[in-house]
Image 1 (cartoon, one colour):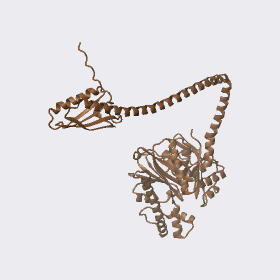
Image 2 (cartoon, helix red, strand yellow):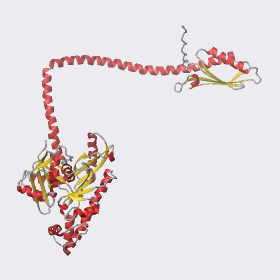
Image 3 (spheres, one colour):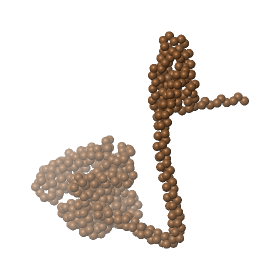
Image 4 (tube, helix red, strand yellow):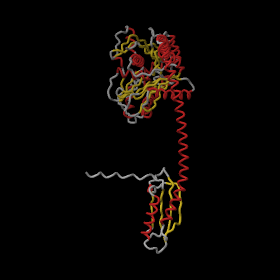
Length: 548
């Protein structure tokens, strides 16, 4: 259910308070106040104004130098991991700035250019500025809902009350000292930024040109400045004032253009092109500014008035008249109230560390404590009513523990025997191999001596551990292999038959365990024999099926 919220936009020249709730696809305003005050800092702005109604559940906007909006491209990760990444980011930035910062983040709507990644908008504000707001809000008798960047309030005002199409739009809220800018594509937020340098730049230029006070300069700006390209000034004073305003208006144009470039680099939207620009805020009312910016950016520039679709029938006559007069200046307050009241709004909620911890305690930890107390009470009752079952279970557990202890002892003994067996097997294999190598050498030399022809003799014999695929001894399963080299006398009659008979005789005497290969020269004047008595048995060919 939508909540009734007060959107609070505190400025250095005026404060805007708008209260109501979002329901039925629009916002229903119940209270509104626009309060002008002398130029002042934040604390002075709070103390110099009175909304005239209670500021319950206030969403307060923040902007300016003490607010930082950053963008981080991250892989698509679970929420808990994303929170850790953003916490590291905030800690690093806070350490670099040397001041405490509060923060919150939200993921931007996905774009085709960022497939497979998320772009995270991280909003940070100095704890000092939040403390000043909190003190001022408490002095006004209000209660804080949360702090949110003005730029995101502008996005929510556009999303709920703008005419959404497929084009890319730059929206700028031009305040007295700050400009809040967003870039949207259809309903999707692409980029949000707060800039320093609003309508005050024009006031200062006119004050310096004419040597008048800031208040007088603002009056001249409203009455005689016309930035419409090609317009003819009414008189010499209007011409000088317009020329004085042209330079800061050009600086404002550069700020908006730089926002587009900054978005391209930060969010990696290199093909981004703005189709039109919408303005709001007090500075947007300067005569000819829309046409001036349109001429510089080569796109249509119009005013953004969301109150055309906002329900204001519940306002009293004074509040309705004040809102009608300050519609453009109250867009941020409307967006703040909408963001906090609409549960489906795109929201970033910044809270001071102490307040966040207190809310987490009240909203989570306290309930966990209560739940734990209830659980303990239930367990106590359950334990009392099932005491006999518990005793039976303990008896069973004791028996199982004894059986487990015996099983562990048997398991330990078995494991020790397995280790001992493995060691003995290795040692036995080594001893068997040593003995086997000697026996193989002796038996082979005996077989050779028994069968070698008189005109043949051995010139060399060696035994070593190695593999030989031809002897069915694969790599990794090396065995003792005997290598013999021999010769025959030149002119020996029928050396091929003699050599064949010799090899057959050796094989017969060493059968059945022998695996042997031979390699005689073409003339049989040289030959080699490789053999082993340790090869695995040759596979037996499948017996032929008997004929019926």
